[in-house]
Image (cartoon, rainbow, N blue to C red; front, side, top):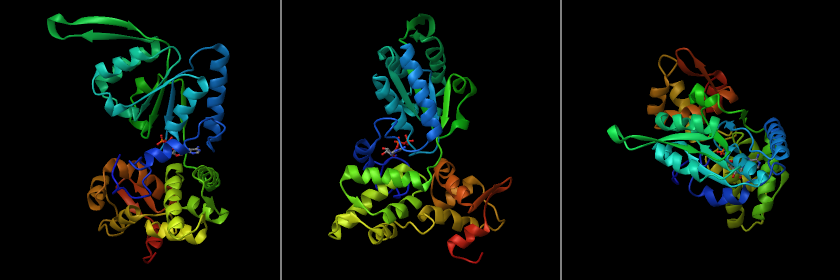
Length: 332
Ligand code: ADP
């Protein structure tokens, strides 16, 4: 995703993030904060693969945007000492594109496919034999001239990332030997992440300020790092080299992030639900009411509001809870 119109709390990658993310990305499993279970499983996989001198099993990383899936894919390639080839599901428009990438892979390379649930079905079929037998039957030409070209591939490791594990087809899902789900980070992990990032960006941050920013960042490293960058700007403009609580509060206020870590769109969703005459709204109506894509509401906003207990899903639709009404500042 792109655009400066994105709210600061969006966990999607925005244009201005890219340089920052390159600088702040953890480079090894030891630098990767939190997600202990996933990190532990992956380090066992890595150690075993290295001991055998073989490419590890294919890995599926699932979880909301901004939690470290891309970082983990890069770390796997780095720790294996191999090359990472990165693409995305929607970019693999034609089977030709995928076959082109597959045939370039050298022994042990990592192929990273972000948003793998969005690989078109006709292209996905090629992944099956590629993952299982390290071969593809590529069809040249069409109609009476059609010829099948069997291609042998080098053993590689596919790392797929998805924000919507439920949308993966069973045959694709079943071809991953390792599936790791990333969860939103607890505040203590986000404090560690933002403190590390502040060190890299050479800006001071007081522990109270780090806690405040961490608490409001929706459990998401990408969001906490974005708050840090904005807070650094606020500190600099104010002539301070350190982010203290006052600077952090000022920054969050400017970004429209309230005491619950809610931003404009969260409040718009809650407001729309609080006005629903039947008490519930379907996803389509809700999306139209707040002017946001259904996908984004389902992947990003709803999970957060559900976790906070401000929204509930019922068989008839979404509904606001008493706590949600209270958070809006209205009568409970
Ligand atoms: P995803 O692929 O899940 O959207 P990324 O791997 O791109 O997420 O992570 C976004 C940014 O968040 C990274 O550039 C990095 O700065 C930071 N980040 C994510 N996970 C961690 C972590 N566990 N430790 C430290 N920083 C992290």
